[in-house]
Structures are given as C-alpha cells and as structure tokens.
Amino acid sequence: MSTTTAGIIFLAVLVLALAAAHVPFGDYMYRVYTSEKHSRTERVIYRLIGANPESEQTWGAYARSILAFSAISVLFLFVFQLVQGKLPLHLHNPATPMTPALAWNTAVSFITNTNWQNYSGESTQGHLVQMAGLAVQNFVSASVGMAVAIALVRGFARRHTGELGNFWVDLVRSVVRILLPLSIIVAVLLMAFGVVANFNGGHELSTLAGGNQTILGGPVASWESIKLMSGDGGGAFNVNSAHPFENPTPLTNVVEIAAMLLIPVSFIRAFGAMVGDKKQGWALFAAAAILFVVGTAAIVLAESVGHGTVLSAVGAATEGTDTRFGVPGSALFGQGATASGDGAANASYDSFASLGGAVLLGNMMLGEVAPGGAGSGLYGLVVMALLAVFLGGLMVGTTPEYLKKRLHARHIKLVSLYILLMPMAVLIGCAVAIALPGQDASMLNTGPHGLSEVLYAFTSSVANNGSAFAGFSGNTTWYNVALALGMIVGRYVPIIVVLALAGTFAGQRPGVVTAGTLRTHRATFIVLIVAVTLIMVGLEYLPALSLGPVADALK
Image 1 (cartoon, rainbow, N blue to C red):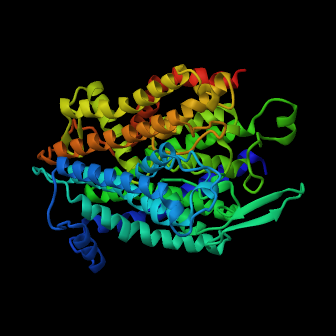
Image 2: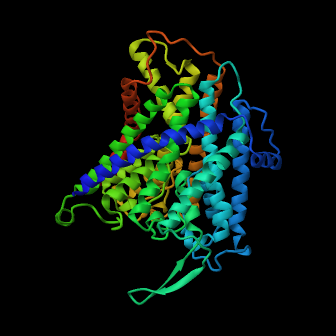
Image 3: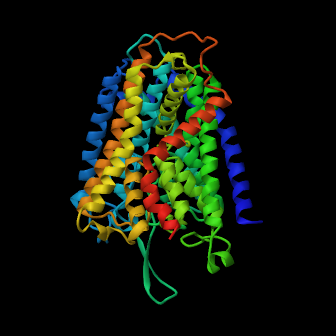
C-alpha cells in the first residue's frame, strides 16, 4: 500500500468516526450548558470563589470576569515557577533556569491556552509545577474558550435580553462535567496502551554510543490526555508527542489525534442543538471537515511527492518523522494539531517539506477553524459564517441575516476587527523581529526558511496554537516578551469582540424567514464559508507565505 493511499484511508476513517462520535457527545454538552441544576461539587466551588450561580451577566461583565480571572492566573503561575526550587517534586539542577522572562512567557502561554514552550519540560519544570500549575491551566484556560463559545451561542438563541449567562458557572461546568471526566477516560486508555504515569526522578542510562543519558518519568498520561483535549499541546518532554513516554505506538497516535478533535467538533453539534436547528451545526461541521480534508491531503501530498535521488528512493520526505508513525501518521497528526489549535507534535515540523510546513502555517492563519480549539474553533467558525452571510447578502441584494438575527454596521465592524487583528499582530511582530539587530541568532537557518521559522513562531503564538519549527530558539528576553504579548492580543481581543457580538445579538428580536432569506444550512452556503475563509487568508498572508515557505520550496 502506498503512503498516499494509507493516508487517505486513515483520514477517511478518522472523519467518519468523528462524525459519528460528535453527535452523542455534542448532545451531552448541550445538556451540560442548558441545565438549570447545579451539582453538590459545583455549589461548593461557587462558595469558595464567591460566585452566585443564579445571577447572569451582560457581555461586559462576562468579559471583565474573564480578564480578571486570567490576570490572577498569570500572576500565580509566574510566581509558582520562580519559587518551584523551594517546593517538593522539583528538579534539583534544572538544565534551563527559570528566568523571569521565561516564567512570564510560560505563564502567559498556559493561561492563553497556547502552551508555547521556550524550555524543555523534562529539564526545567518539576512534577509539582507540571501538575498543580501547568496542568491546572490546561483545564481552566480551555474552559475559558468554551465559556466564550457558549456565551456567543446564547446570543443567537436568546432574544431581547442583555444577559449571556454566568462566566463562573460556564467555567466550572466545563471543567467538572466535560474536561475532567473525559480526561480520566483518555488517560486510562493511554496508560493501558503504554504511556507512563509515575513520579520517578531521573534515571541514568548508558547509550549505544557509550555516553550517559538521563531519562525522567512523571505523571505523563494525565498530562497527555488534557493537553490534547484542551487544545494546549504542551509536552511533558521536549520532543512532545514524539517521545515514546508520551506516544509509544501507532495506536496511541490514533487516540491522540482523535482526542485533539473530539471537543471542537462536538461543540459544533452543541451549537446546532442550542440554536434549535441542528442543520446549522451540520453545515458548520461540513465546512470544517472540507478544510480539514483539503489540508491533510495537501500535507500528505507535499511529504510524499519529493524530488531528488534520496527522496525518490525512500518514497517520502521522512526527515524528522518517527518510523513508528510514518509519513501518514505524522502528517495527519500535524494537520490535527494545527487545525484544532492544539500545537502538539509527533514529528519535527521544521523538517516537513516546505509546502507541508506552509499548510501547517495556513491552518493557523485560517484562525484555526477546521475545527479549531476548544470553544475558540466554534466562535471562529461562526465569525467566518457571519462574513459569508454579509457577502452573500451583498451579492443577492438582501439584508444579511444569520439564525434570524440581522447583521448591522456594528456587527460587520466587529467581524472586520476579529479578522484583521491576527494578521496585523503576526506580520508586525515578524517584521520587527527580522529588523531588530541580533535577533537572527534565534533562527537556525537563513533565507526563506529562516523567515518561515520566525513567521511560524508569531503565527503560532497569536493563534494560540503553541507548535513551533524546532530550528527556532525563542528563549531570549526579546522573544519571551514579544511572543507573550502576541499571545495576549491573539487571545483576549477576539474574546472581547465575540462577547460584544453576542451581546448585540441577544438584544435583538428574531426576524422572520422569508423567500429571500439566505438558507445557511445548504451546500451553497457551506461552499461560501470555505471560499471566504480561504480567500481571506490568501489576501492577508500570501506575500509573507511567498517570501517564506513558497520561496523555500522553489530554491
């Protein structure tokens, strides 16, 4: 069986499995967020944090709660990392000291659901910080995105009100009823298939070359499950999911890919159920699936069709690819990680073929809507649907409406801000980094590939993905500060925009469907969403992609 054929079969099975699995799980998520009852555990948490679960918030109060919670979380994790050497379960002599700049970058990274890592997990962070600091943020940072998505859906589902729910209730339910039980199931599966779970320190081993190597254990299975489902993707080890302790077999590779995608696609189902029209959910699922399939096919093709004697003899661009997974398993993992906003890696993305790396970049530049991160993928898809509705209305001469809610000038301004923010932050940050003297030392390569490394770093940070081209070294004061600022802008400005949209839609009365209303659940509209998404990315990033990965491929 050829590499391409194997990749196609693998992709088809995965899409069909997710299409089936997301229905019951999406319906369960719908019940979680619409239930009026609070469990005993949840009530205890509300008392501890001083929240009133019966009260609701306007979009402004909802946004202020998110910003306050995130600011406190950044401060706590920043201090926690700096004092970890005085706490139990720490690394006695870390290879990478936790400087204030690195602690700042890491704290912001995990609070913004990015998990960009300018350090090696096994040589910098102790077990206590991994569990009580970073892993906790894997849960709650994902829950922030999930809460925002639910608030937006309520904006469409409700009418003539200024209230979008309660952030603290949505946050707690996301953790207690969805992420925590699902992470336990996935962790048990991973342990059964060979992923380690212990509190072991370093073991000194002799290598085949006659040297010594320190192998660290840790609570890897529990970390692995939540890092994948939450959209964080940070690795307990430097090589992430290419490490045999994190991802030992092709079977665990399949489980991890599915774990990255399950919550984002299930959110689409929950969206359809909450707005009272499941066809709308299927339409968004179809648009995300088309983008995902196209991206996967492009990566597999780029990695499988190589020029030159060596690549022709081997049959694929296997550099940086683990033989346990092969090109199809690595390409699909990379597609899942960058299209879902997860950022995990089971191969060296810097070693992908130039056009394969361009697809990884493109997935993030899409705004990670295929299907995107936990919650953030859904609201990104909805924003693209709003843009498609607006453009479709202009083409046929009707008032743009989505889910019986009319789009006004304010909505389009907010949509435009959402769409333009990311390329502005990415391209300005990349341009400043390239122009500053001395910053080229962070690039392993020069020329187009070096530009691609910097472009990937800022795209990954602003898109809150967290993956990287391994040749790029970001542990400098400049990059620790600049990339962290990119993460903050890329996370919280879109959240504020989305909540503002939700607030304006919730205050509207629903319109009436007429013969001239654009049907947003049909194939024509699905194609329109896909086309608008691809065209917007092309307009925003084509010059940068041409100077980077495309020029690299043409060398």
